[in-house]
Image 1 (tube, rainbow, N blue to C red):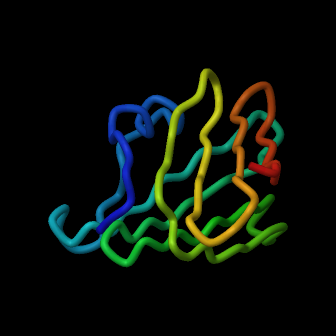
Image 2: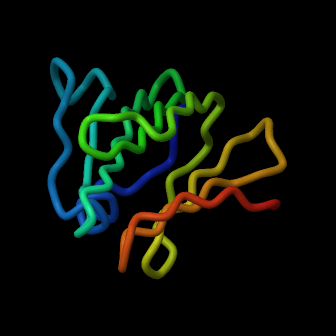
Length: 107
């Protein structure tokens, strides 16, 4: 299996196209977005391995780094992104406006 996602939704939230690692067919890509305060969120996605590396940084200093395994889906919900994993009771919600906010919520 692989991570369920819609590229157009991710492009909308991150306000850019992904950077593909090697070729698009490898299923590996990177999205990043910076808010008005210089907080940057980056997700490194590996579709076929069902893994995401989530990085939150400011001025090149890492605030949060989290490797997520068994990711089932990336879903656009109104103005935020929901990352759902199969093996955890929490989802990760990423808000982009007015500022970047990463929230862990119970399912």
